[in-house]
Amino acid sequence: MEIVKILVATLAGTSTMTAFSYIVSEAFQKLFKEPVLLAIIMKKLRVDASAKTKTVLAWLLHYFIGLLFVLSYELAWNYFNIPQSWLVGCIFGCISGIIGILGWMLIFRIPGKPPNVHFSEYYLQLFFAHVVFALTVRAVYKIFEP
Image 1 (cartoon, rainbow, N blue to C red):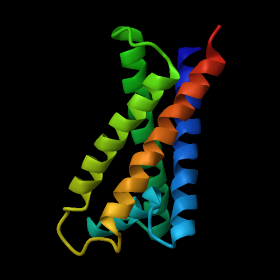
Image 2 (image 1 turned 90 degrees about the horizontal axis):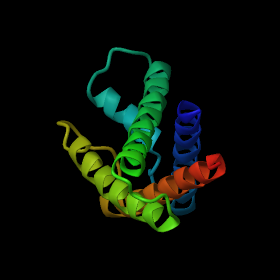
Image 3 (image 1 turned 60 degrees about the horizontal axis):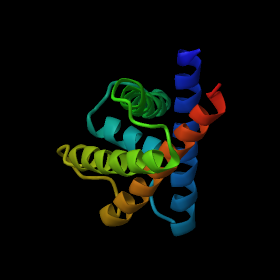
Image 4 (image 1 turned 90 degrees about the vertical axis):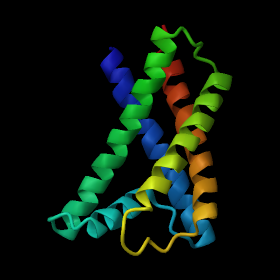
C-alpha cells in the first residue's frame, strides 16, 4: 500500500505543480514549463535522440525528480517522526522550492546559450509551484490515512 500511496502522491503532486507552472507560463507569456526547459537543456547537452524522445525523457525526468521529493517527505514523516500536517507540507514546499531553485541555477550554468528565461520570475513561480506540489502530496497522504 505504501508504494501505491507514494506513486499516487508523485503523480498528483508533479502533475499539479506542472499544471501550475503551465498556467503561470501562459498567464504571463513566459517560459516557465519545466519539461520544456529540460528538453531544451538536453538539446544543449547534445543528447543523441530525436526531439520527440527528448521531450519524453524530459517528462520522465521531471516525474522522477518528483518521486525523489516524495521519497524525501516519506523519509522525514516516517523515520524522523515529523508530523504529517498542512503546516509541515507548506514548510516542505518552501524547502523544496529552494532546492528546486538551486538545482535550476546549476542547470542553467551548463555551457552554451541559456534558454530565454526571465530567471527571477521563473524562480519565483518555481518556488510557489513546489509549495503546490508539497500541499498536493500532503492531500494525497491525507486521503490514504486510515
